[in-house]
Length: 552
Image (cartoon, rainbow, N blue to C red; front, top):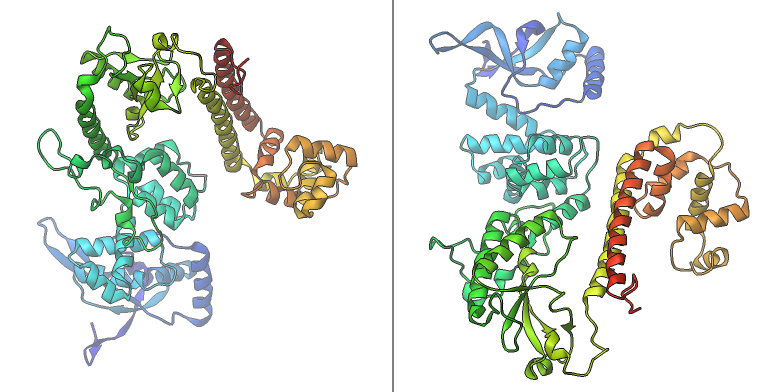
């Protein structure tokens, strides 16, 4: 290699003798941008030489030596790709440097990290690789002008599983959503992929937060935080369990780590540890009262404690399985488990008075343990004792009201499933490309667009009672038919409107008219919800109540 004053000189090397390095952490290249660069090089030439080294070769004995006429790219693979687009036989200006593998890798990473358009995942992998080669986060922060917090952010992001990395790089997963998922261990990330991930869908931060809320535990509501003797919880082997206050699996302890997010409430992301601590707490709690539990074969008696389990056919399979395990454990210990048929009436006021006169009994609802909730006592009347007292119509059973509430929840859940399905499957481009006159349902949505721009006082004139509310599709459709609205609007406006986050109420109607698959999904979802609601209503009628839990 020729040098002047120890400075490497530029050499012209045949492009066929130059090869990309397998160590380069940059794996994605924008083809359009490279074509644009190739055109600039064709017109002006390559203004910045490529840095290369002699390509290393390992012989059969494991000895490494450089090849004389083969070169490996250290910096400038994008320029190399652009030159190759121009000609397979051109000579490329290069600076040849004598570098070891570690030195070459360090130079590659440094160049990639100094780009303005660096991909977050590539940056994360690069920082991770540098730390595995002995560079500290402090050194990386000083070298690249970043904060230590920023470096740690990116290093943690490298923990994402491959499908999530690809989604983040492609813009289908937000950076903050990526940070949230990067906190999880590999098994929990895989659970998200199995349950939610679709390579054609986009995921907002709120989508990720909603999934995390369903799967992870709010430590403010953790049962084991209440027991004063469990400030330091011990497992059966006598080893101290991690303290939630300082545990790395407490999301609040990532608040200073992840620069792109704020955590307001502490959540546990280690389900195994959380459940183990909860089980230890429940065992401790029950032991405090076990001498007062009603034994198997014995009636509910004032002064004792009844273990109570609501027979709920609407629990999820996971909750049912956990509830069965708890019930079997308690019955095996010789205790009786009561149901709402045996103790139907819960006392909501004057509990102390009814306990004192022997007409009620304290209860522990073991379903709270299945839901990993804090244990709270409730009071229920003893049926035999209640017969000797005047009836108290002001204290009805709460079970019918809870059934009615569950019916509403089922309907809302079905609505949410339908809207989420519609948002993910609405083919905007296909719809906009349609030709011909607008259908009646399209005219209805067009009127909704106009409705959205009208003053509130005009709303009530058109559809009475909607001054401060959004009308249903049926209300809007009825108004359109009565006004014979003009059908000259463009479908682009419709597509923008029905896919906006705050007008999801019209998505279902749009999907039913656009997709057979969507219509089938919506029909099955509604049918399943209607069957569950019908079963609840049948049970309410058997108990003498209407669907709103009013006494018949």
